[in-house]
Image (cartoon, rainbow, N blue to C red; front, side, top):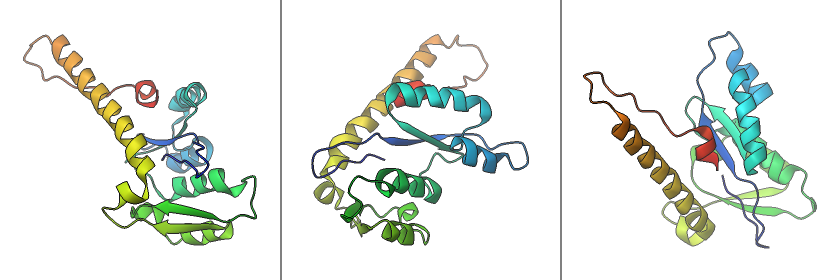
Length: 174
């Protein structure tokens, strides 16, 4: 999630990475409550990436934005803003995770007015989404393709199937 304001300010991006489900009973809930969805061992790496890259990371098994992450984002961005008496208008796309029953009342409680961007109108209503997200996603795709090409070059041609590995978390977040 990328955020900019009408004064030209940009805020640290929020990114959701994929994580494995915990094999320990209650582990998924503990991972969310204590480590933003990351397991114990990956959390140390995630903290270092956040510190080095001015980015906020979350994780879940689908790598999709969800209600919990959105509520935390709203709290961080608007819950303790410098001028809480000034209402905020937030233009948000139609993604279902942005419009859950818990999100609407929370946003209203911190005086954030959510306005839905109609489908196919992002380029008009959210030009920064095009200017920031497109290059970011292009970079990630290029890294992914370069990683796949490198792995194909290194494949020995044996009869065993090649198992592709994704780019590292650090590469994705740089």
